[in-house]
Image 1 (cartoon, rainbow, N blue to C red):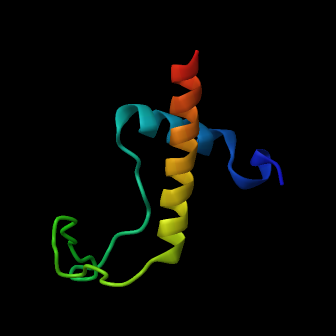
Image 2: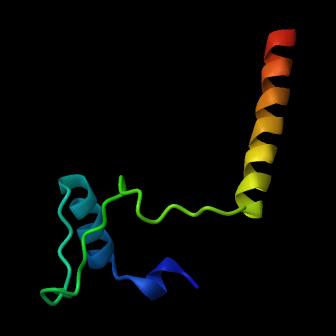
Length: 75
């Protein structure tokens, strides 16, 4: 599927200008009360269990970082 199939050149230009200006117009408007604010610093929803996927990502990151640092310092 080519980009031409998804967006017209005018739409692409409008998006690029919107990104540059920091303002992108949208057609949809949220109903009052349908959007809820979320506090990322809130401690209300802390998961108190094991997260095997996150542990695997952490272990892999630590291993690659250790190998990279070892190779960098070995030079």
